[in-house]
Image (cartoon, rainbow, N blue to C red; front, top):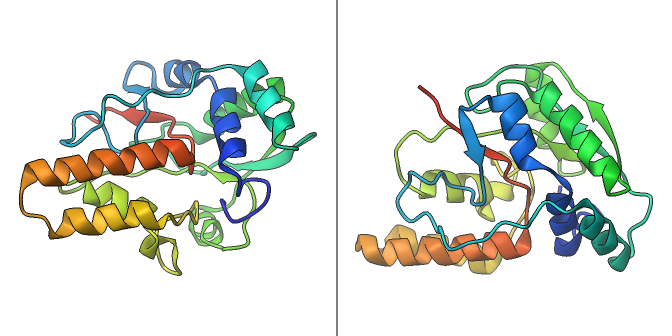
Length: 213
């Protein structure tokens, strides 16, 4: 929840991203059926910005970044979804690996879960603390189906799917321009720019793109 301190600071979110060994999570949980993600849309989708570089896995740098941001002895929750989904075969194991990684950066994480319906409902509580494990399966092949649905300012409102409650007006403005454009090349450029903002703001750590066969 990017509205709850200290997760309202991009530098704190970036530090948490650096603290997690995403390749190890992909190897252990997805077992060859996924790849580490650096963007919120999959690499097979048009307008994917491959020029973006992910933060390196570096727990010591993460710890130093948290200290520089004035955050010490951070405690947080990781919500592990209680069901198996195509995009997340084992949320509990994923949460355990995240918990172990975060501990190396001096972050104490506790794992919680709820019944699936309650999990989905509680995760949209604006006052919710902690990190929620969830995913998305695209259904129409358009980047907007990921970016607007999951990350726009409108989707951060009540009833939306933006569980990070992240609202960046510049980002959302680019998405609106892309919706109104008819030229695929223009839309691609706008979506590529939006992905740069996503990376700079680190609204959440995108762990993996799974392969569904």
